Image (cartoon, rainbow, N blue to C red):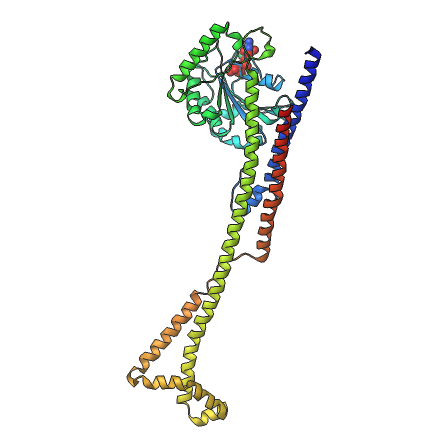
Length: 451
Ligand SMILES: Nc1nc2c(ncn2[C@@H]2O[C@H](COP(=O)(O)OP(=O)(O)OP(=O)(O)O)[C@@H](O)[C@H]2O)c(=O)[nH]1
Ligand SMILES: [Mg+2]
């Protein structure tokens, strides 16, 4: 193949790669938007039904660690294809630098960084760190940079070197809480095996082995193949001495920054690093879309629960209402019956005739006669007892009526409607958007595979 056609095909491959970046970027951005939009965003909807959702990230984060001069900053510059980070033989990177893509080339201080990345705020609590945190925003769109945020860290050294903050603690925190990928660079000529690096690597490996990738950096400087093999053996042996790092099949690709111009016959596996980044981006997109579906289902379930609880409360209230009616009816009916009976029996005929009329008196006597019969059946001696008992019984019935009248809070019709609308929105609109995004994502990845 001629050079010209090679350039051409590489050019078109890049164009496809860039196109796929933009699809992926858009998918992550749209997912993010579906969560954070005011009122109609999933975070707000979920909050309304008592669920706390985290907003999905628009980029993956790669943490680079390694000894001083291992080539961390140079690698970032190579990836970004811009000189964003200072590099050199001296100890160059003294703090944490977040290198990310944006619309404008800009450098941010620690405080601005904390405003931009709220999830980094716990770092602020670690003494001294804030003065050594910064952000470099680059407009580069090279490789997959628009979907990656790098965190460059201070070179790790043993001995007298004093860091102005607790470097181990802060790297461990970033590895635990922020990084999707942790690249460890071992440099064959430097202090690759310094204790500080090994300690941090071991501690991170304990919890996040799957996020960690080891590389023999500056491999072009490692001399001949046999020297390189020896260095690699030494590093692997040293790592394997640590119980938490003693795994079989230790993978340590050899990488070097091709642009540094050294002629080397050493195999450069730097593309593996880019592939690792791509793999993590793809996994993140899939996870984000899956999480979106799960969050929609959780919201719908929470709304269903709310509606079910409301239905139960409504039927409880209905039952309570009928219980209250029955108790009150009996509680009032008994004393009224007794009073009516006493009137019928105790009042003179003349008085009853004059107040109720002849037919009224007859009706009263007719209906109170069973009570009167029961009352006369009770021995005179117990009349007061029975009367007392009936009054107590009535009071108990009235208290029961009062107690059972306590109703549960139910949703207003408007609230219920709004819940149903939100459920419908999440289950149909958001989910169908998610389906569309998944389709786009798969189409783009299958498309690029075919080519
Ligand atoms: N030959 C060669 N030199 C490299 C490579 N990567 C980095 N260097 C050189 O190594 C030196 C140190 O590189 P840096 O990128 O500053 O290393 P670092 O890990 O960021 O160092 P600190 O910031 O001090 O921790 C620089 O002079 C680079 O030019 C490489 O792949 N090959
Ligand atoms: Mg550096």
